Length: 213
Image (cartoon, rainbow, N blue to C red; front, side, top):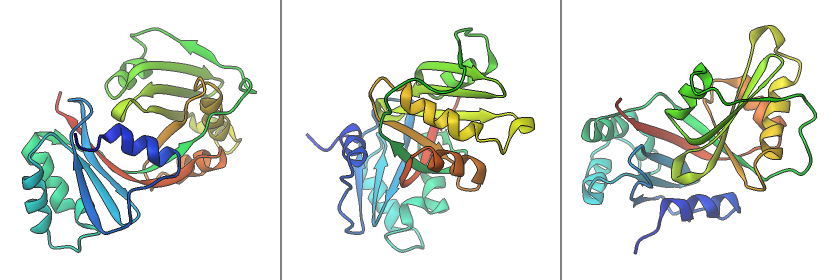
């Protein structure tokens, strides 16, 4: 049996990365919802249920070097066309170990399935939990290959007070002893600073392709 996406992510969380050999590994999707590309240092992982030979032929036809071809817009567009999927952005992927103790801020869990943040989170993750703080929201849920993912939102009126960093840190305390992953658009400097300030470590890039509808 070939290498599984979950095994790769579990190893990366431990600090063990794919070899920096300039190659691309193709593995099956862990579930129908999520396909895409992971970019690590000098190694890429394409997770798709499409024919691996089609992936390699398409990569070879991209007008780019082997290191950048998997994240090249031409390859991503070809993969989206082939799979009838969409992509919102290429994210910075980061991970953090769990933290002991309780979050030092007041959080109220939201369990209303009709709440707009709960409904939106369920489109991208399973086992979603959402907490509200004064001016912010923390989301935890299982995303790609079952990994535990965190996302935060902070209202404009309470920015620059450390709330985003506190929420990201709280995710580590509410993770039940698991490592926590986060995906951030590189251009969203506020979010990047908040997660890095909370101890998340960048490990690569990710282009997540979602099934339409």
